[in-house]
Structures are given as C-alpha cells and as structure tokens.
Length: 427
Image (cartoon, rainbow, N blue to C red; front, top):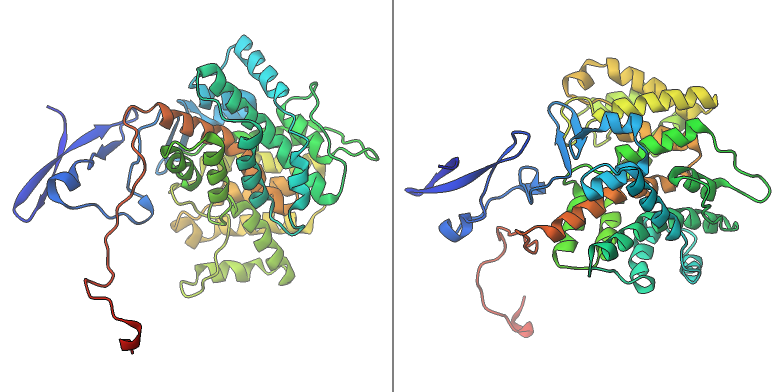
C-alpha cells in the first residue's frame, strides 16, 4: 500500500497520498482535498507548496546542494561551457561532440535579429529600464519568428532562436542606448566571447577579450541557469499553462525576474554599496541598522529564501570574484568597500547565528561591475543566464501528462452578501 498522510477535521479523516522524489523529498498530494472536504490549504508565497514534479534541478536549502539533472553545479562551473549547460537543462543530458556542434551551428545561424526590430529599440524613452525593454522585445519576437510546435525539430529551432537572439538583443539595447553602432555576432567567437564583443567592441577601440573575464561570465551564467521553482520560473510555468507561446512565457519570466527581491538583487547590492559610500563608507552603521528589527533597512546580498546555510553558488562566485579582481588589478573604491563589508559580516555573530551569509547576488554584482557591465544591465545578465532554465521548465510542463492550467484558490475575507444601494440613498 502506498504511503499516506491523514488529515482529521470535524470528526472526519481524509487520506492524502504521499509522493516521494528520487532524492528522498516527500510531498503530501492534496489535489483531491477540496473535492472530498470542501477545504483548500493556505500557503502565502507558496513556500510549502509543490506545483509540479520535475527532472531538471534539485536543490537542498538545508545542506546547500544544487544540481542540474543530477550533476553538481560545482562540477559544471569548473568543467562545462555555458552551451553545454544549456543543452543539459533543455535536453536532460550532456551533449556528445556531434550534438554540441549541431547546437552551436544552430545558435550561430539564429544569432542575428531582424533589422526592423531596431526601430522598436529607438522608440523607447531614453530612461526606459533594459529589463522592461527586453521583456517587450522578447514578446515582439513572436511577430517576426512564429513559435513552432509541430515537431521536436521545430521546437528546437524556436528554443535556439531565443537562446541566440536574446543575447544579441541585450547587447544591441546597450549599444543603442549609448547611440553607438550595433556590433553584430561573429561566427568565430563562442557564446560568452560573442556577447562581450557585441557589448564592448568599438570601431575606435577594439575590445580585447581576456580569459579571466570570459571565465567569470561563463561561471556567472552557469550558476544562474536554473534554480528550481523560483518566482520567475513559476511565472513561466503559469503563463505556459494557458498554452501561451514560448515567447510570451519567457517575457513573463523576465518581468518577474525584474523585481529587487529576485533578479534585481544584484543591482540592489551595488546601489546599496553606493549609498554606503556616500555616507563616508560607514559600513559598520549599515550592519547595525540591518540587525535592528525596528529599522526597515536591509543589507542586500545577504541571506536567501531557500538556503539555510551558505549558498553553494556564492562559494563559487566568491572565488571567481577574488580571481577576477586580482587579475584585472582594478582600483575601484566601491569594490574595496564590498570586500570590507563582506569580511565584517562574516565575522559578526548575529549574521552567523541567523545564517545571513553573502549570497550569489552579492558577489555577482561585484563581478559584473568589474567586467564593465553597467548597473542597470545587471538583471538583464541574470535573464540571459536563466533563459535555458526557463526554456527547460516550459518544455517540461508542455510534456507533463498531469498538466492543468494554473488556477490558485483563495479564502475570501470581504463583505458578505448585501443589496445594491441606489446612489441617491447612499450616505
């Protein structure tokens, strides 16, 4: 007999099946609870609610574990390319040499963006945030490149279009915002190198690709490629559950990622450091405010919603950060301030006792600044890295035999039944 949990209420017992995952995780299946009892469960923020089963990413917040399709993220960050990681997430296995070559060719062939899309970029107000632009432009891709769903080959074309073009569109938006000539992708450069070249190459100052910078970007994107059912991934699945096209689902994910409590956290780290710097670099005062329960101030880049120990991605990104700053010999007071803040927080008993370790956003903000990425583009960088995970999650949900359109319930707490009052009789 399968394992079951029992819920007793008002003299009745409801038997609820228990589902076990391959890593030992267990979930109580409440899908029949409302039909049998008339009740629903309440879970603000869905922190204790499973919305699907998945083969893509496993994470254990208590132990600080993160794996893509069973492979530890530490191994991927050390040994894999970003293209290999993207292929792994989307297809469920690492590519062999032929598969990787075919994947690379498709990415190269679809890396150009329709020239008419430049008109859209040029008509956004100059103050527009790049994430808003990117979300709109991804949705607009549907008009230029219809989503294909008829066969596995056609789905692969849609997927590679997104992976190739979003990278190009992000660099294009940066160049147009500066009033500079757009730099086109080159067939002789790999995925990360191509992006850096499109961002920073100039007719008057050719961009010199540095291995330390390429490695930092590669690891950054790999570490952000997927993270289970987070806010933006849930948004992609919810929109996809209506059978909206892939472009619309990804556009929704970008919009969700924009928030400062999600993908915008790395930008918020730099903005926080800037404010501390304006306050004469008094990071001790900032630490004191963060420990004051009555002060709304938050130390951005510390702690995590899921990880109750050190974020495994943060360990990797910290090393990348240290190596990059050492190799580039950058003199930046803001980065020096970040190092001082990190050292002080790691020694503070309050932060240690409350598991408020620096997370991946803290170090990634420093890394992106060192690479030369403007602050308002930080979340766009996150979106490029998360794109393979969003695509994989959308694709998995499309193939799920238990698919249902997402439709959460609520507990109504408003006015009870009363009659309409004509306007002349209202007080």
